[in-house]
Image (cartoon, rainbow, N blue to C red; front, side, top):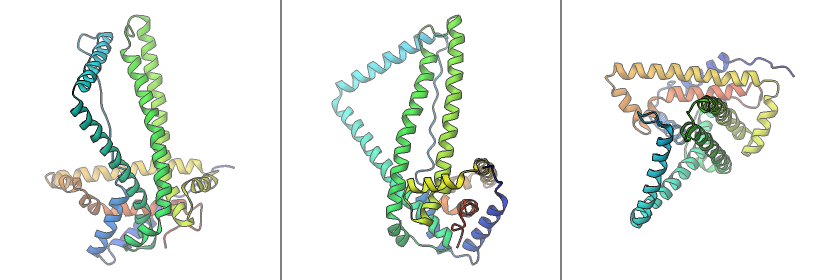
Length: 306
């Protein structure tokens, strides 16, 4: 089956109209605060950025760098073994952090249905949809948890492979240096493919699978099967929708940066505040959520804004 083009601009226009109707006709501060809280819950687990880098020493000896890393790691481990109280506190802190991450992921999974329900039906509710979508929220939570547990070791494995190629003793000597560069380039290419695949997995999940779960009362795996059936013959348009959203995000980010500097960085400070920033960005967030519903509704007429 050939790819049939799907409109990007028409769903965006309908999403914009829903935002205007929902937030400005009429303007109701109480409604903004309730819907903003739902949006904040939905996005709790979506804003993490992780990064880091390591550079070799100025002497350019990669083998010595590796030896120093191993030596420092061994010394740190021995120090922890000699200070049981500190080790216990670190272990307890890691356990508490893990529990916090799980709670945030669980709340966010339920919150996605609360916010989506408000956008689809143009209302401002928290308690009723929070209770009604308990089963779907739990289903989404477990899928996101398993997906994360799969992605993390893959990312660590690729990072470890790249580090080993860069830091192994003698890896940069003569012909082996060429092989190391080729290996690092290959690992980087594989990592790029894995990152793009993971980004699209979670984009399709949040943008299209969650609305299918909401509309048809489906568990996450059943909703994925329905999405894959609908997507057959439309993968080009669906992939393009991800790029379209990326461009919209870039434009919105640019506008936010300009506004932040125009307000002498006061805008940045307000946006950095939990919940407050979500309320200020609510028009953009509602438009995006409504757009995704209207876009996938082109393949499933039972979807769409009410």
